[in-house]
Length: 197
Image 1 (tube, rainbow, N blue to C red):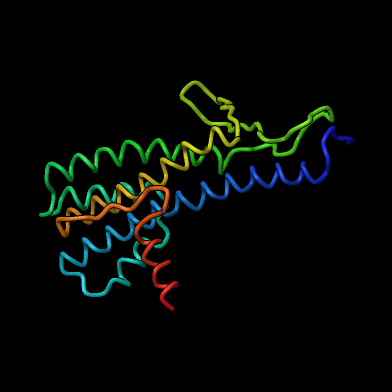
Image 2 (image 1 turned 90 degrees about the vertical axis):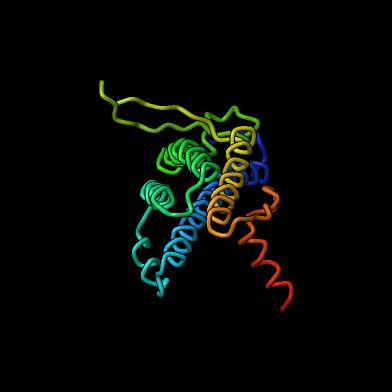
């Protein structure tokens, strides 16, 4: 197929879209990491002596079961407060929506770099995901581009910070929130350790 765009630009624009989707997948898992950390710390504060036991219990958990366990454990704990409960409700609502978005992109079919030969740019890609509903199958259409993904990535970072803040405040009573654009405090601490070597 002959494209109305140079090969270098074509490869560069495709790579940018793949990078966006990869960044989303990575940032989403940071939220899951922070939920695992919160669950483990709550169990430790409740008397668990070997954190490896909790790590093994959660090893195969994806986002949905992690969210349920994270919320339920804190709701049943002696550390629950009105503030923490409200944060848990906010996390639950936003995480369910973000997980649906994640599944749409990660498990959907995306046509990166496809065209009919007349395109002059490939800075966006169309995709779809077939879902089952009560009335039969439905095809959900979506687009991958910078404008669509930047708000999603921002939500990932903000939600990761909120999850960490919630369990930290619940268990220790205080939290110094990191800048959402700078990553989670976990990442920042890891970077500081690397820089100090």
